[in-house]
Image (tube, rainbow, N blue to C red):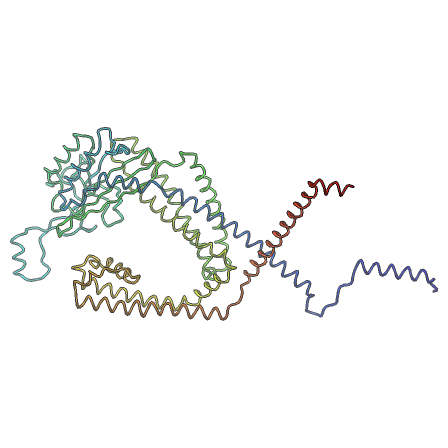
Length: 562
């Protein structure tokens, strides 16, 4: 078919325009995608990684801010100053107590005189809430038993003592009821006297003593307290069977809205001389009374929402990964956060319930002893758990820096040395325990730092970090010198240096085989994008200032319009 020359030229031009508008794709080899598609795929992966990293960072930073905000509100800034003031007011003469009977003297001269008739303390800032409680625990008198087995020594012992009272244990405590003067067995018509055994809550219950005992509540207003103390002294309420005397009372400072529990423990062991300890916990019972407390309530509600979110992801991860879930350090930390958060929520609920019950009981009888021991214990538990949560939350933020090469290298190093360090750490613990036992057996009868197994182990631990008292070993020129030199050589110069050597070797091995992590590429991509955006914004601002300068210059404006 004949086509005119002009028509052929027109069709050729039309075909050229179509090819220019819709270019043909380059043919690629089978199985190898075009380089352009590979770059687009990598860019898509980086975009997805960027999204996940930003989402995780924002989510966890909000969570950490909530934890730190709640922890900050639980820390009472005025607690130290309040407890220090109470200690200087009531407890400055506790070191004068040498025997259990000195408790009477301390209360008559240091406690009750510093409380006025209207309940205010000597500084005029705090008020005594309720009564002062005295409680004691006792052990029975029994036939003296000589453990040496010699008849002559037993006969000599019987010349001086008919009955003996051993040290206190929870199983050996006396729990019977008596008439005044510890005589006879009464009928239980009166169950509230100082000669009747009854259960009560105490701060020292977790220490070593039972929560029960022989209790008396004393009205602090004169002259009632003098009458009660004189009656107890005349009736020998404290005698050689007494193994511990507890004195508890509660103060309230309305200026800072804080309660201060004063709890004094006077131990009278079988060896004779009394040992005195005291505890001054400070806590706030009135919550959500101020405007700032509404912020705390908002933080707590948001924290519970985040907790539900973390529980969901933890359960889903455990069901999906099974045992592999617990091999990831960061996932284990997330699981610890969930568990500790549940404990903190349970402690918070228990604290609210106990506080409300305490208020209710005190309203019914405001002259009785205000016992908030359980509230103190739960509050301390909650404070410890929240502080650990804050610590783990801050440590968990290290994962957000996983694009850093140094941090990634440290993580790989710790992963390599974890197995040898556990075995090496076991050797160190065994040697420390051995030296602690040696110190306790050799020096325990003469040096306080080795008097018990617990003190000996703490002393050896201080020795490892370089803190020690040289006078403890000067008393024993031969054995003390051998103990000191051998410990320094074996522990400090050999084992700890070996510990550092293993870490350094693992670090160098990981450094030689170091490969840039994938997260590092994502972080680099984020930084490049941020740099491009910032440079573009700066360039736009510069052009805007230039244009504004041109428009505001009358000479250039008139020249341009002329």
